[in-house]
Length: 167
Image (cartoon, rainbow, N blue to C red; front, side, top):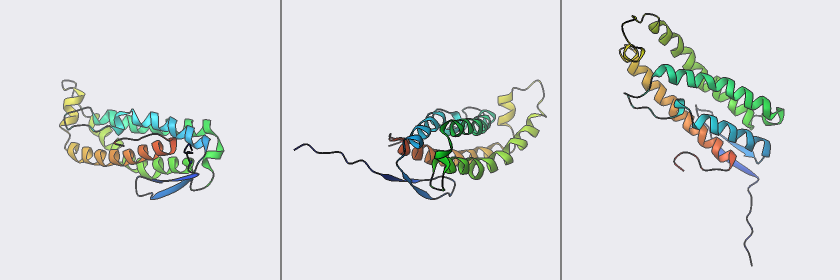
């Protein structure tokens, strides 16, 4: 007698930025949108661990900022059905942007920009950035945001029906 696979009708995912956990009803449109978000987020510098001597924080901030337009496009393309109710991918994606990323970007983007505007022409952007008095503080907060984004990426993977980071 062959074993039948039983497909779950709902799944529970942990969310980042103190948003808790949600139970999602299995839904093809949410699965497809989650996959698109997963691909976009999992391949960006903003979600990859950076050593203290790797990359630039300006690039990481720009990468995080780009998630707003990417997420908006994916949600618009998916349609309103993925935004119905608090237990929807649409509402979670918007909360990740507005509750998780927006405060971090609103704090650090203007601070770094003000510092960058004082850079002498004789110094490279990388060298100047690494001498910023708030460099280590910002890197620490960036690391915390990246850890939260990994939680989000793993939730997207689960909704998509694939293995996430470290799974």
